Image (cartoon, rainbow, N blue to C red):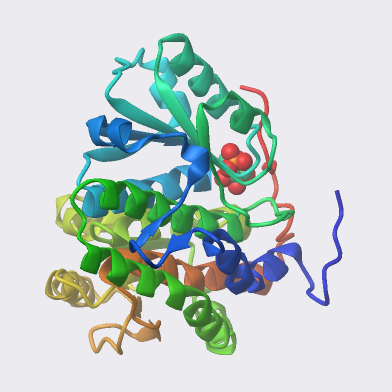
Length: 364
Ligand code: G6P
């Protein structure tokens, strides 16, 4: 399919720019201000069943797997159900124990990724309950699942996913809030998250307005042969996704590490030629993240921080607006999409069609 680029030079740029509207769409019609909860009828879960869930396992590939990692964190913190995410193919090939009290969630933009579809089929064959968090309506994974929610990102043409990633994470915030309010999340806490969700489209627009500064930074870091991305807890999947995006479209090698693991190996790599992007939210881990930046500085590493205020330990800071701690990862990912984009542009890459990659991988 080909869609109008609407004045943008690439689909990727168009899709990054569409995020305020896309997020508005995934929220629309789903928030219940009377009970401070969310309606997601497509989940086909009645409250009694929802209370019986003892674990959540999220499956996906690539960027959708990363969205699932953030989703697992949201479900664990808001609904207090143990949750984790795993690449769909890894799950399938380790002959997983399929547990009737586990809720399985398959994540896919296209709804056609073979590894995810095959995992869903394997789960269903073993009697597992599987929901889909999918963008393309009526796709194979959406049809196979027992229920689910569409993320309503709209058509995504660029091979690498941006707006669908963001919308998928917002959809997970809705699912987490829904499950949380059936379980132990209070009315006041439900209200706090709803207010945070409503701020997202405006805050994403604010970030997009800083594109000129991010472009300049990208041009300064584009000569790197390799880049390190670090974060902790909620920030770690943001680092993983940002490093994937950079690899996919700029072909610069990048790896993501939990900041706390630096001292167990990757610190040996730090030198001026290996810059680090640090995810530094203003939350309970701020001091820990600052200490990690100090360790990098002590080895003369360059640091670009994504933070809620200027970081004096960093060489440069991209300042993003603060939301509720749980929702911060959604906003912190946005400038890093632009960083990858402008790095790839500076290097003259074919951004919408990176070499060796396909938009959806429907074979094994
Ligand atoms: C391909 C794409 C990735 C995408 C992954 C999963 O590898 O290049 O950008 O994240 O498939 O795709 P899905 O449609 O299942 O989200």
